Image 1 (tube, rainbow, N blue to C red):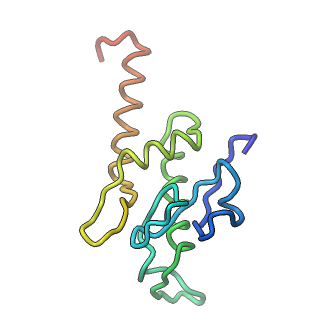
Image 2 (cartoon, rainbow, N blue to C red; image 1 turned 60 degrees about the vertical axis):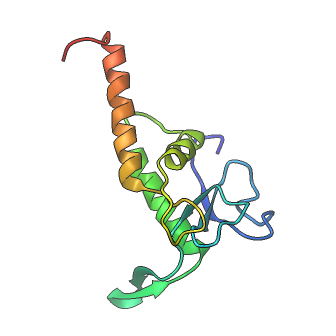
Length: 134
């Protein structure tokens, strides 16, 4: 973390488990459960995933949710003009989260997060060019 690496882990109860007990690790829970120790949430019940030998299946658990958030974090980092800190990523994902009718807590919304990142970066570029012309 001292080198700017972002870590994502599955939230647990009790919340003092490795690795999410380490300050700075993004704790992810399933949006169906809403653990108090979670930083973010994503779908965690019956999520379509890959299995060995080119198979697909449905899996459930906070590890599945953590894997999804890890992919979203990587996507946001690749779309960013510069380095995104863990705090910036968490803020962006929380600001753009949405709550479905069946969810206990807000779930990440990658489309909204990418759109907000794009708008924020555009505003920053305009501001550095003096706020004017194209």
